[in-house]
Length: 501
Image: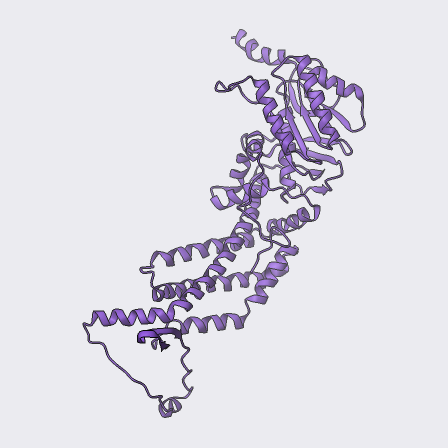
């Protein structure tokens, strides 16, 4: 049995290797804030969210498939949580059954397997019932496939047959085993036999001829005989105990996979409910093909910032379809880094099938997402900051491919203006030739001005807005780079306030 809620044709691989730059993405985009907001303390949800967000989808149809499933979850939150709770209950019941296991003998394993299967069958009935009575509430291909599979494979006849087998495997009337004599008159080919069903009527049972049998009885204190008889019984039960244990594993693996896939959607549900309480908008993005260059959005905000502040987060608008180079300049503390982070988060959320933190969002998918952010000074570094930036940039270049997106945040500012600008020009020119989409936040005026002066149709320059009184609106507008970052505003805000005291 397969869930197929994350992919149309395969299971979601929670253990798949994450991209080599995952740790950099987590650090630069503050992804752990997002994962914790989705998980709300549930470790399964955290791991599912982490794996899904970092394993980006590269096909529009795969993204839309997952979006449709998520729309169903958001429309039916109680049912989605009920399904998820059933998968959690399955593991709890199996754990309780294993807790009481006292032996590793085949008879003990069989008794435990019967107990576990009895518990799992009850949950399978509940799972099918949820689908049967609520299938009309779901419209996505993913949920319809899941519910159709449950209805097809878990029919009433199936449950009747399972219950009959479980009743027989309790061996209330003893165990029927056949064997043969081997070399040295040792028993071989022990086989568990199915007893004949007794006649239905009492009279027929009383009049039925009984087969000839040889019987012996153990003395009440014959421990050795009891042990030998137990070993003979185990010989006959060994195969059926293994088979039943494998059946349990198969059912439990289904519940595990269903829990993993539902955990991602429950995380999305948790996130949407928290954002609704904060009155922050969400929207399902419109993905475009890798080869296109599309980037248009309204009200895009940093979802992680929304969970670290009590105020509403300022959103930004942009129309940059057909552009593959976005350069961002402007006043210090004007929201440039926050804007860059909001772009990276939205790109990842879109490419795992989630909604995005915006009023509207449309962008092309990317083959990979990379970040190259300025790092704080590290006293343990064996070389300078510029060398460290080059090393990280070199590692990115080794992994990068056409149609990737690379976010630069004040890169190459650890050297002088002229040298840093020339480095930035050469690196971005080479990346653009390889069809890499770039968003570059910088204070390097010489670099930014040279990009602006080229006035290429595939480039757009944004500038952090500054009010006439020096206040920050945290809005970005299209505009030419300025030679100043208005650092004196921050100086006056800090030291001017002290002088007034």
